[in-house]
Amino acid sequence: MDWFTASEYWWSRLVFQRALAVLYLVAFLAAAVQFRALIGERGMLPVPRFVARLRFRQAPSLFQLHYSDRFFAACAWAGCAVSVALIAGADSLLPLWAGMVLWFVPWVLYLSIVNVGQTWYSFGWESLLLEVGFLAVFLGNDDVAPPVVVVFLLRWILFRVEFGAGLIKMRGDACWRKLTCLDHHHETQPMPGPLSWFFHHLPRPLHRVEVAANHVTQLAVPFLLFTPQPIATAAASLMIVTQLWLVLSGNFAWLNWITIVLAVSALRLPGDAPPVPGPPLWYEVLVLAVAVLLLDLSHRPVRNMLSRRQVMNRSFDPLHLVNTYGAFGTVSRLRHEVVIEGTHDAVPREDSEWREYEFKGKPGDPRRWPRQFAPYHLRLDWLMWFAALSPAYAGAWFSALVERLLENDRDTLRLLRRSPFPPDAPPRYVRARLFRYEYTSWRELRETGACWRRTYVREYLPPTRLAGVAQRS
Image 1 (tube, rainbow, N blue to C red):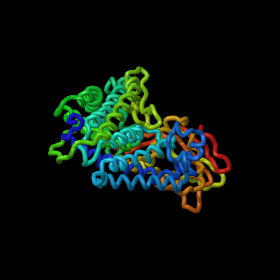
Image 2: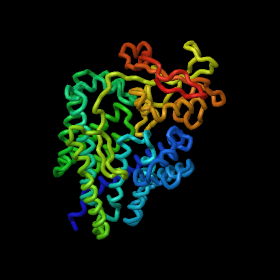
Image 3: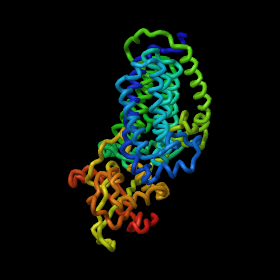
Image 4: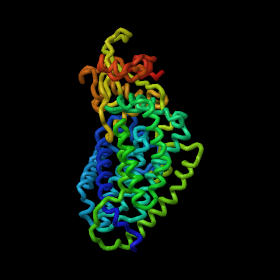
């Protein structure tokens, strides 16, 4: 059936698949490196305790059937290995059905991780990777041309990502309608990047232009994805440029990168496709059945986008097949950071020698310039940003973090940039204080070399020892 395939997207599919495999690799690598301290058997939110409360159908996962740290590590590193094979094009060397199975493996493994990841895996880009990864299973390999229906379903995801984000902004914070959100966003975003300070100091009229251009890209351009070529390619290219601008201005894990990868699937890249036979009947039937299922499930995110009570980043089914997305419906005007300190003193006093723990990505030392980590995801650093917004966001894990710092827990300390205490001499007390952080001016940067200035706000956690981890204030 000639209508079933679109050979003109042969090279777009190739780039899309290899780039998606890279993002899978990043996701599995982060899971393998960070899981023991976060959700391991002795983690802050242990998987065994979590799965004991849930039925399999509520959160399908291999770890519902069996969990051990060794088994989780094996699954995460297996995901890395399969991702590397996909990057190298192993799926194209296999028969069609085997290539599909190879793409299915990382989807099952990452779904298993996300469904037991709890707060640490509650970000929208987790569901987005799973939704895109599921469609990638049915995109085919070198044995067939790309199926038209899958190409357009990928555009449907991209449409929901961009249009949903645009709607949540227009319905949310008034600063988006006033074009003033970027007066604050680069300073208060979860994890600034190395260029965020400079973006913040751009002229305010340029900030207005940035916001207006963002509205156009998210509210008008997505509709052009469903128009004939070359208009659809132009629309996708504009989205790629916008996302690259966001990549430069902050650290948003792989959110921007997977949006770029989705946009690549809509491009019509030059080059002729090699001749291939028509797709087998079983493949056509399977792809069309999956398309019908996904379109049927799409009514829930559509209803959410049309609702005045639109929510961001919600999964409507335990398999994360069709989800709703959005970001920054509200922009913070002030930046607060939780600074964690420890002391060796037997009796903690204000004049004790309090030593500060340094995190890898979140602001700490005012003189330390932010680094680029995205698309890698520093989960603890991101949750620390939420903890600074409100102690309620940290209720499930912050006390456990403090307890592990008091123990000098090796796996937890690996999540940090630096511990101020040697491995054999943990602190006797740990405390947390809340500071307001502001970018310095050009003059202050030249004079002090500091990109931040910080002001003490209040106590966040009183001095605490292992005998009893106190509650946050």
